[in-house]
Length: 275
Image 1 (tube, rainbow, N blue to C red):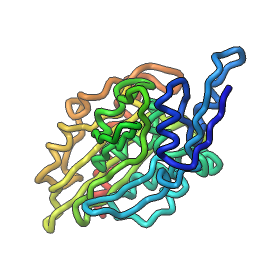
Image 2 (cartoon, rainbow, N blue to C red):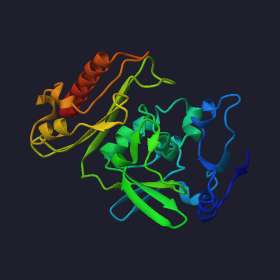
Image 3 (cartoon, one colour):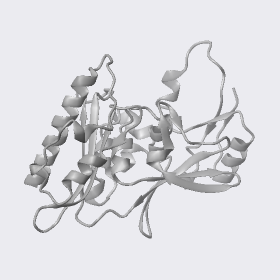
């Protein structure tokens, strides 16, 4: 097994372009998945590349480097609309995992239960992708294409996430349902960003659900129903949850997941109305 640890993005992209290497950031999902006798992999450790770290303010929004850890996100001073993302950061495994696990690794691992994806969807995140020949951007909603599947081409890697400025006074929230508070794979999770006008009516709504579909889903029908209404007055129905496709597994049945999501969203809307 070859191991590369470049300190510049250009060097990393050159190595990646040769083929046969796997980019590695925190490795919190990669190493537990290794099996005795499994295929040997050459690794490209990107954690030393300064350009992939940090959270910065840019014209029109924010940039989060792909190798930024969840601990860094949890501690960052960000607008209230990012509160859901910061709350999710505090629930990604234990503190040790948060200290090494990265936002880029979380989305590239593409688990249906990835904690970071729902709040990033509510923030209209775009993924910046680089290769030796240049860079491109695409919406996170199109980047994760299935279970453990993402829209990366050979020789490409994620270098950053870009989040546009949210509406002023918008507030974010995140709830994760599991069998215990920490160190748990989600049964379901909900992220939300709402803004209310002076009369208390919603004029901006983003709601996303994870662990209830192969890919985390925005709930467009519910978002539309919220516009112009007070959040506590909107009834969450199964029709609002039509985009979800939960499965039965050891953590819960599909029916339980739908009931749980409906109740979690209803509680979050009531809390938003009280706020």
